[in-house]
Amino acid sequence: MSSQVPSVGFHPANPDDHTHTVIFLHGEDETARLCAQRFGRLTGSCGQTLRQEFPTIRWVFPTAPSANGWFPALWRYEPTTDQHLQAEGLSIAVMRLRSVIHREAETLGRRYHRIVIAGFSQGASVAVLTLLNFNFPEGLQVFPRLGGLFCVAGRLPFAGRDLEQIRTLLDLPDKPTNNLVVPHTPILVQHNHDDQDTPVRHGCQTYDGLDFVGANPIWREYLCGGHWFNRPAGVDDLVAFLGTALGIGRWGQNRGDVIWSGRLPMPSQAEVAAYFGKTVGEDEW
Image 1 (cartoon, rainbow, N blue to C red):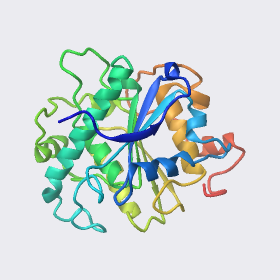
Image 2 (tube, rainbow, N blue to C red; image 1 turned 45 degrees about the horizontal axis):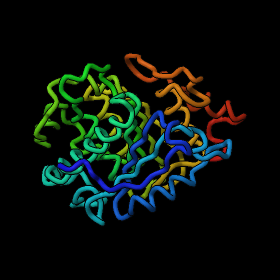
Image 3 (tube, rainbow, N blue to C red; image 1 turned 45 degrees about the vertical axis):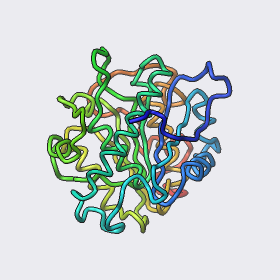
Image 4 (cartoon, rainbow, N blue to C red; image 1 turned 60 degrees about the vertical axis):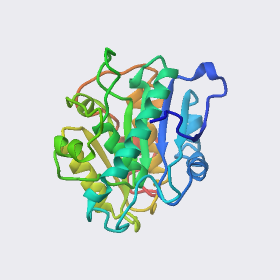
């Protein structure tokens, strides 16, 4: 498959300042450009956008192959129905994202631990499955992790199945032979309780399914925000997650590359709220 997946994005003002990449997959029934515009306007409690928080990150928004999304959703509001019929479309979407990851890794000196994959709604499904089916290039000696994975208002296809069953269903040509990258990649799962398009139970199933296959996800649920990011608390938590996982920004304390095992030691919701002089539950917390 060609690595030239069309995309839009935001780049550091000076190309030489590029240190990390976040690849964010849009949801169904929207374009990469529209998603990037909405994402670019997100601000946390400090009033800064994510680009301002992390000026050395390149933000890449790949374009889905269809106007309807990354894969055919047979039952939009109950997407777990007849999931096996979606396997082919999901496999193609995973291969597209993997090609973008490898392309971005080349720009970073093959430092895969500096690449974060992410998605909203249907894009989150593809991002999760890509992590579960990710292989590093043969012969590359690296610590087995990506920079991170974060999912917003998404779901995990084939939730409840083990890792080998999921990989068999997708039947990718270079199926991973081990489970090393899954437990070592930090994961954040966010969902709003009032999401009417993808009910919060699907977010819970995503968290439980990732935990079941050996990942170390972190769960963040918010009362409101609908089918998108919660503001400002969800954005604040994302800033804390990226900073801690990548060792950059206000929460990374400029530590640089971070290597560890187990669950990411990111600040709790209460700690993030307290940083901005708030309590959990205040102003959309």
